[in-house]
Every structure is written in structure tokens, then in C-alpha cells.
Image 1 (cartoon, helix red, strand yellow):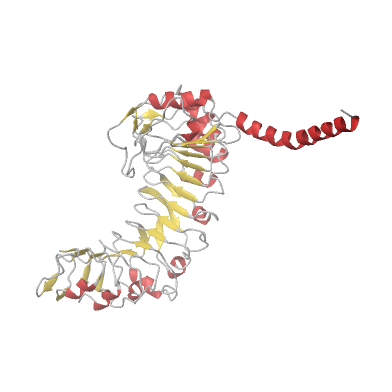
Image 2 (image 1 turned 180 degrees about the horizontal axis):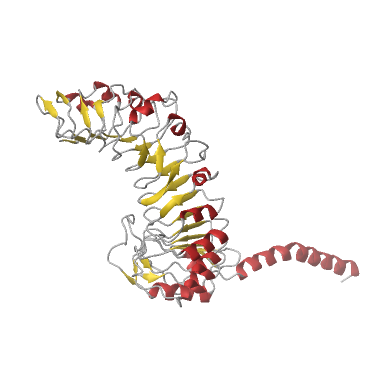
Length: 444
């Protein structure tokens, strides 16, 4: 065997080693990562086993509910509701919403050993009036925390403010005894600078001064504080926050302030000020600025000026997509219903003007191509006839004209509406034969 042959063999071995070794190392590196380390798998199982399974889901939005069917000895990264980092194997996401868990969530729960969690959803379970543990403050990587409708009680711990990476926080719809005190709220507002979504509906915030809401993150796009017991005056410039898209302050009956007639946020698309004492000036130049609004609830509000006819002065109203949902019920409005409210070519799908003191005729012009699906004028003093142009509302599913003074023959032409399911006409002065299709909706 000559030197040249040995050299050739050496070069071949060197070539094979140099080309195959990196690929082998890369593959070997990937396979060497153990998905879901044993301690995290055990922590998940112990957490789940610390609760019993209730016979029905907690809350009304869990259909179908989920069942936690984790099998010991299998890779927990394949378990329902568990998300892992595929490079490190750490558990970074846990979604157990609507999982019918029942029992007390203790501060020493193994849940709090999952330090790498970024998203945690425990919503719509029944934690039996547990206190929200200060241990939640250990999840320093958390960006999303959802404890909605989970029957927590007691104080919201100030340690929640340690979660400086939070983008979304939902503590709404828990026990009415869940309370957020001023010190904890101020720490939350000061430290959670990346927060974009904050939902605290039904959390008792009666001791929080409304002006402190101005300290919340400037990045906030969605804020829902309904039925929080807020009281006192809200600063006018609160409505001018540049990034605010969704705002719900409803059912805070002692919350005052003034909805500004100018310089509103151009981003607002969802607005609910129902059942508050915030003054709303019904003026053309204020309403006309709400160009981005898609949903507007103003039920039982403190309107300055009760003549709904002022809306008729809006020359832009027909062109604007004022709202998909416009609810002005139970406000004591008087005057006539502006004809323009029947003349939207698109956009408006729900119009609710019930429980006011409106008089005159129902708007007679309902344009072709409108998108109305819900129309409610119940509980006013409307007279005249039911306008035949309602047949242009081909998407109409619900029509309530009850408890008025309409004097007309029974509107049999309504049976031509293909989507109509419910018609309420009681307590009017209708005459003629009562008829309607037997397979389409109900006439009352």
C-alpha cells in the first residue's frame, strides 16, 4: 500500500468528516433539547390535580367547555392548552380558560413555579372566591394575563404591578368583593407602561380617584371599567387620549365629567357611557367628530339638551358611518325622530330609541341598501302609520314598535321581509286582520 493511496484515504476521511460533522452536530443539538422539562411537567400535573372538575362551566361563554386530559409520562408540550418554547423546552403559555376547574388557588401552588410563562389564561373557572395571590407577581415574563370570570375575591395585590411586560390584563367579572385600592392601582398605572388592554369590569374601584386614570399607559387602546363604583369627576382630556379605541365606563352611576364637544380622539370605535352622570352635549359639531365609531351605547345618560331632533341638523350624518350600533334608549329624549336616522345607506345595524318621550311620526324614509337588523322605538309617543319603506330593511330581524300611539291597519307587508323573526306591535291602535307567515317569526 503506497503513500499516495494512504494520502487519498486520509483526504477522503477529512472531506467526509468536514461535511457530515456540522449537520450531525446541528441535529444532535436539536434533539438534545428535552421538551417540557420534568419539573415543569410535574408542576402542571400537580396544579391540575389540586382542583376538582365542576359539573358545568363557570360563566355563559364556555360552549363547549374544555376538559383537561393530560397524561402523565407524555410530553407536556403536546398537551391541550400548553405552549412551549421549541428551543428551550420551557412552558411559555398556558390556556385553561373554560376548563371547569373548581377549588382554591393557593399561594404555594405549583403554577407559580412556571417562571417562563408569557401568556396565562385561567378565565371562566371557579376558584371558589380565592384571593389573587401575590405570587402572580413572580411571572416577570408575562405579557397576557386573563383571570376573567373566575370567582376571585379580596384585594388585587400590588405585586401585579411587577408584571412590567404586560400588554393585556383582564380581571373583570369576578366576585363583586374583588377590590382594587388606590395604592395598588397607582402602582399598576405607573409600572405597566406597555399595557394596551385593561379590563376591570365589576372590580370595586370606588376609592380610586377618576383623575388617576390619566396615569395609565399612553399605549392603552382598550379600557373597560364598567360597574366599578367609580365616583367623582373624570378629566375632560381623558377622552382625547390618542390611542384609545375602545372605552366602556358604563354603570358607574356616580361618575361625572363632561364628554367634550371637540378635539375627541380620532381612534375611538367603541364607546359606552351608559348609566353614568357624564354630561353629553348633543350638538352637531360634537357628534360629527365621532367618525371612527362603530359601536355606541348611551343608555340612560346625562344629555345636555333633550331634543333628539338636533341630530337632524347634521348635514354630514347621511355620509358618515356614525355607528354600527346606536343605543340612545331610556334618555328622556323629546321631539321628533330625525328623518335622516332612517336613511343610512350602510353602517348602522342596530338603532334603539326605546323608553324616551319621542313624538311625531316614525321616519318614513328607509333607503334601499341599508343594513338595519334591529329597530326599537318601544315606549314613546309616536303616532301616524308604519311606513311602507321599512320593506327596504331586508336585513331586519327584530322590530319593536310597541307601546306607542300608532293608528294604522295591521302591516301585513312586513311578511315580505326575509330575515324578520320578531315583531312587537302591542299597545297601539292597529286595526284590520291579524295575519302573518306561520313559519317566519312571531307577531305580537
